[in-house]
Amino acid sequence: MGVKLTQALRDREILLIVGGGIAVYKSLDLVRRLRALGARVRVVMTAAAKEFVSPLAFVSLTNEAVHETLFSATDEQEMGHIQLSRRADLIVVAPATAHLLARAANGLCDDLATTLMLATDKRIVFAPAMNVRMWTHPATQKNIDTLRSQGAYFVGPDEGEMACGEFGPGRMSEVEDIVDKIISVCAQETRLPLPRGVQQRPHIIGNDLIGRHVLITSGPTHEAIDPVRYIANRSSGRQGHALAHAAVAAGARVTLITGPVTLADPPACQVIHVESAAQMSAAVEQALPADVFIGVAAVADWRVVQADQKIKKEPGASAPVFTLVENPDILASVAKSQKRPALVIGFAAETQNLIDSGRKKLIAKGCDMIIANDVGEGSEVFGGANNEAHVIMRDSLLSWPKMDKMMLATKLIALIAQRLSPEGASR
Image 1 (cartoon, one colour):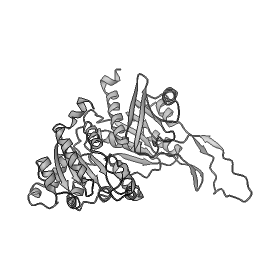
Image 2 (image 1 turned 90 degrees about the vertical axis):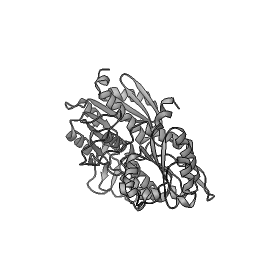
Image 3 (image 1 turned 45 degrees about the vertical axis):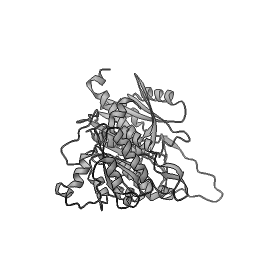
Image 4 (image 1 turned 30 degrees about the vertical axis):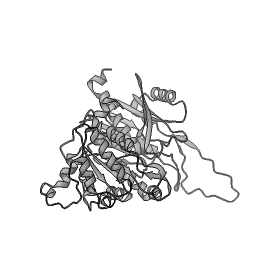
């Protein structure tokens, strides 16, 4: 880790929310590591956390009072729960239990920990720790998707043997990995976008897109076969929605055109829901002009000549034959439009010859940047939480290692801001 990154925590204030679980012992070590890197750490403990370790242990490590209750006569004279959340540079929840994740995802605030998470304007890093069955339960995964869509970061959990004797994902990540995640997030802007109607914008370090219009497409398209069936792909929309979050945080006016996804709409931007490629193309044309177009959506290349009625499966009948019609090429159309944005960026989902295929797409579509992803078997890009990207430009190539999709979005938005700056435009 470079010197610049190790200094990212110097004089930073980290608010550590400690949930209940056997992994609390790792949180004690986490405090030690963060303090050694120059951070100031304030600790909030849930009632369950105090069943595993005494608050005095954290007091001795932080030289700070441990906050335990929402209704403190001393703290609440100054709206203590608001001040705690606003004064911090970053909030870390470790261990993040299934219960804490569920309450955070649904905006419940019945204790100090959850109230702080709801009242904050800063990013939150969750380090989950729970039984494998709790981690893999659809309810938990839905809560995680909701929190990610709101700009939260996750580290772990790891796979291994549980205290209960079961084996699988659910162990809280090792302290070194949590520290690395905290450093990488603190090296970027950690403030969330302000809600619609709030005039004061957060200060964004190095990501100045104030006054710019960013148009983003996200998710899959569904191409109808008949009234009940359709052709689709495996896109979850996570990367496109993460880019919308990052662009809003950078001060941009954002229009997000999304195909069918299960993600919550990002706040503080205009969201347009569509189903088919034709609908997405029309919505993009309507949303122009823009300063930046980012085509993240996995748009179907073809659509079926749709049947008016449900196609019946008849005994002994041969399989139906479908006639395919080419869909509009949204990326190429935007690049050739009279209302062409200053930057036109596309995504290329490839299974082989990643860089060469990306370069060919860059030239064929007439865009300024292609983000090439390997979506081959085992990559977990489609539907997964992480992404590994090659940023292909006409004058350069950047290869970024696998990282959280929100982090990749932040890096890409910073690059876009740089390219739009007078210095970047003169290259």
